[in-house]
Length: 465
Ligand SMILES: Cc1cc2nc3c(=O)[nH]c(=O)nc-3n(C[C@H](O)[C@H](O)[C@H](O)COP(=O)(O)OP(=O)(O)OC[C@H]3O[C@@H](n4cnc5c(N)ncnc54)[C@H](O)[C@@H]3O)c2cc1C
Image (cartoon, rainbow, N blue to C red; front, top):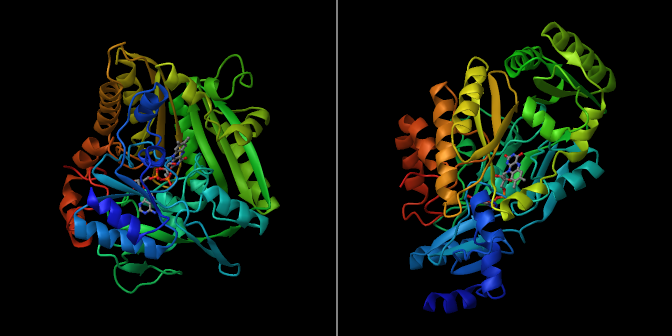
């Protein structure tokens, strides 16, 4: 591959051809891949890894790749869970982690700019030292990059208060496949015709390579009041969650766990009897606002059949909410653990939850499945399911995963749910995505053709074949 020699000369010090360097960036954390890796399977490797140090490196690489008809896969933190990054010998992985400078903060307006490879946790640490927050708290906050979070349309634990990524991003800098550096969007909102920015969120590395992200930032709240309540069953809990969300309270987080998810997350802290579902919430803001919100939450929850539980549950959630250390233990011992999220309106949430759980339970290899509702907003919320399944000794984990996802998403969609909420599409969710988005596909393909006519960027991800 003579092009590799040329690339070494074009981007000296940025191109890595060694096996270890390529292995480090050739995939993400999707469970099937992770399982194979932990169990010693050989995984495909990218042809080269390029570690960009500035937007101009990205421009040079994309121009070079276009001229040579090479494929390029952008990679941020590599924390994706749906195979958004999956490179073989026909692709170059563009590693953006060195693009991690944090720009000046406009404190008065609450506007912060940082390069796309900056990890969100690092940005938050710096902002919090200045009394600010973007308010984006995905469980992967320590390992996900700003570019990846934008490219996957991510959503964090406090989305009810701060919104999901689309409510946070106010401008982007990106390199399109023609090698041009483009600046899109600016705060505050405007009415100067259609905006391009929203069309680029969720591109999953197929519409351009994001090099810088500008986000809105808020003052850290003065107080947070946590509450938890027991409900008889998930449906009763959902009705309480609906009323609480739509009552105009200063909610930060609000999550409803089914019984098994609650037992898994809060062992030893739950009442012995009478718990069919657990609702956890917080109210945020100026102290008197947070306190008044929590008092209203007590009243609304009680009216909906809730029983207030002790404060230890909320404290435990805050302390352990990002801990996923048990996962690798299961995967390495041959148990496929995975999560699937979808979204539904308040009207459809109860039946979508029930149908999805029943469909997964009916798959013979499944040994456990539980779920929770979160990311509540005016019109609905997400459902998030965790399952564990044991592939037969000769079984194919990818086939099993597909069968379980198919059972779950087909059943939920039949009840009106949308087949994805915040993990993106990658290579795992494509089949169900385009079944749902058939009517929008033609318009979106037009956008892709305008930006990447040669399909150079991340082929195989997001779009149907
Ligand atoms: C334990 C765990 C918890 C998680 N919790 C959450 C959660 O709470 N909420 C949530 O939304 N997600 C969550 N995720 C999923 C994951 O963290 C997100 O999808 C995240 O946005 C991925 O960011 P990344 O930088 O790691 O992207 P990567 O995995 O590197 O890439 C993801 C996709 O984005 C593209 N991409 C990456 N960087 C760029 C760029 N600069 N320009 C263009 N395209 C780019 C890639 O090509 C790929 O298609 C979780 C994952 C794990 C492992």
